[in-house]
Length: 238
Image (tube, rainbow, N blue to C red; front, side):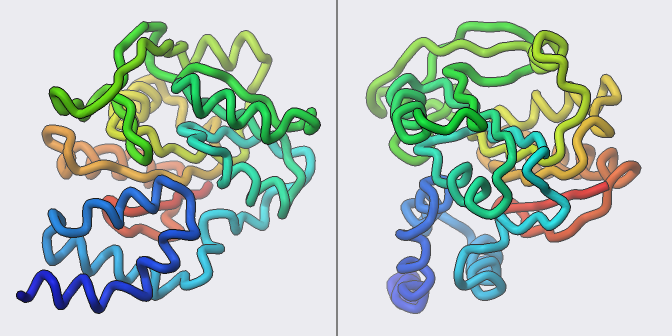
């Protein structure tokens, strides 16, 4: 009874959620399994940003800025960001269906570059479980749906190959794979290459809370927190 009434109270927030990128819509799908604390964090996120503008509000960006979108899904975040700043956006979406969709969406925009692979500590081929809002090779559920062999490319090698020495904004929403990537960057002193991070951490990864704490402690040495809604969205800027 309590859970149903709580969901009823969340309906205005869910209406906003439906209009947002799939990365946020998937949170609605999982509302019933979230703890009361997570309910509160999600509710506070939407209360503080009722029109969904915060994730694309980065005044330091210009039309010459370089932005990485890790976990492009359907390209809505990239679209919102480009509409505001006209910057160069590198979109990484390893699921072929979504990568194809993003390419079609931006086929006439030469400032948006779409890659059908993910970024990781090293090159690898892995099997991903396809879920409309939460495709993941970290959080797999046996018999949960279709799967696909995807490609991961070394983050450092990609930067070298494309002569990228600075990233003005890096959005990371990669369904649990953020931990290994960020830990790799932390271990190799790569955080200073990125002026601002927008990160969605996922709590289904073993030791998630402890690992987030270590990553954020390292980030705090070069960046300061603009906002932090645990396991919803956090943002760090130099």
